[in-house]
Length: 474
Image 1 (tube, one colour):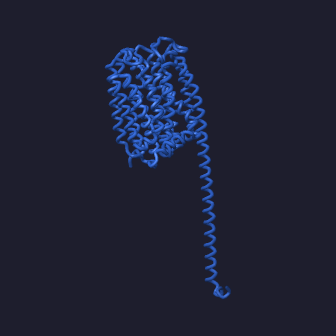
Image 2 (cartoon, one colour):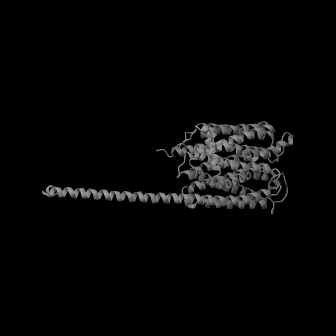
Image 3 (cartoon, helix red, strand yellow):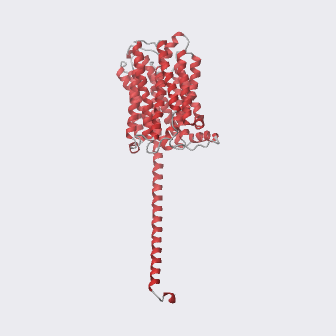
């Protein structure tokens, strides 16, 4: 008997594909604005083209999510992820010959690829899970995917350490980094291409794709999904913060050290540790999550993030998200240890939020997984787009105010949705229990009736056989 069953092996292979894809993409996300800032000195690029690039990615990602579900159903999750990973490779290759218009065009292409690769991931995951394995598999997938931050961070640290202390990233270093990122994106394409068919495949009506789009819009306006929209929106805002804005703050705060690019790599490593720790914790808890409650874990994730936002306020200058600065932090001189701890906690909190959302969607929408995950990514990407769009003009402290307010509101929405879902499940289970009791009672009554009838028949037969005058008397 194999040590791992087929569905688990499918999820592991899926995780390896996403590890390879996001080793490249998350790593470049940490350094993109720093790379663009270095290249802008030649006059060929806008100084904030990195922020605009990320904004375009998430803008197209948002729009494409409206049609992602039917596209994934047409292509199947496997081939949707293959096409999506190729879009990532095309984007990465553009940094080998930096051109502003190619950057924006490939960013739009990547936005489309992201919509189908993430919707495909959610659909493929749900088709390899049962109620009992949803929490474990989603946590395992998240831990494998986000461990790419750790690997990418180590890679960046080695490259920037060899480069030496410098605020600028030379063209030769950029070429090394993005050659590796492009190759990894291509490798992930092959990993996805060799995925097995899902173990618990969904039955899809391919006669009317208009219904699939319609079902996505119908699901969008249900009570649960309207409330979840605020949850998804917060994950988009905080995602833009930890992937782009916060690393930029580290890179632009000169008092943290002379080689701030190497510090970016250390931050990526710490964020990766936080992501993996939260994913492993959720996976180890497994079915105990049901007893503890997803809302309890979300409370932990929210508390962690609020602590991080406070640390960012006291540790970073208000202009650190916009330009290189020698200024003091909000309350103290910028401290590297605090910056790295905050990076790790950002990753930990982000993983808590996302693993519980994955678990909730798989449990609550098992027959509409593609639609549910496309809506998740729609709202998430829309707010990431907005955050990157206003990032070039907004000081760090305003980012923190937005994050605090939205995190508290999102947590309240999740608590309410989880509660009504749990109450409905309890009512349904209670109804099924009572129905089983009635069925058993009916069966018991019918059994006793049959037993009495048999007893009466035996008695009548016995009387006939023992009374010779019975026929005459009758």
